[in-house]
Image (cartoon, rainbow, N blue to C red; front, side):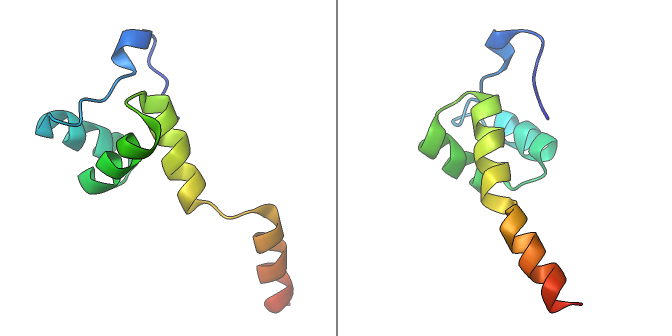
Length: 71
């Protein structure tokens, strides 16, 4: 997880291409996904990260169903 030591560094600047690229690399997503997340949750990097990970992760129920299908 990306949690900077200083709260002021926990901000993304969606109008700065270099900032978008940096955060996209840190979060392993595209710059467009970072922009979409910023529109959804604001510029706090930790909020953006949680939003992005939540949209890509599976639930426990989904994993259990998948396991049963492969058994």
